[in-house]
Image (cartoon, rainbow, N blue to C red; front, side, top):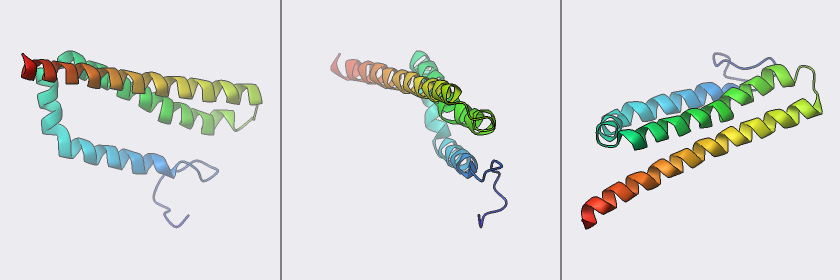
Length: 115
């Protein structure tokens, strides 16, 4: 409540969105050279990683925002359950793609070292 300049929803929730966006931007700023090199060397793995991150953010942030703005206005327990299920499904799919990308990358680099 003391931080008035950060955006939030009508009920006071949602301040985390701006903080996570700032943290994500800082990580991208620090690692952009490595990200570009990873894209150049491992295009398929990079696209899987980005796809996983997109699904994770859509589930973890997008559906959460939708829940704050739509579902809570006229609280319907069935709609709320569907919203939570959709949010968790997208997050799990995103993390699974990220893990698959990491395993493919690890396999690529260990096979180069071994062979």
